[in-house]
Image (cartoon, rainbow, N blue to C red; front, side, top):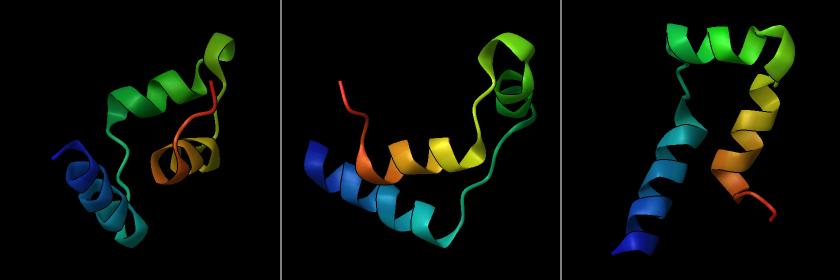
Length: 49
């Protein structure tokens, strides 16, 4: 079930990924600078630990 959910999320993210205002402010804060491409990479491929 978990794998199916991840596949569905990734399929939807390939079509379109929206960033809410809170996420944008976190992404743009000086102490947490993270790009939209980095977020997309983690959503689509997973995060290396």
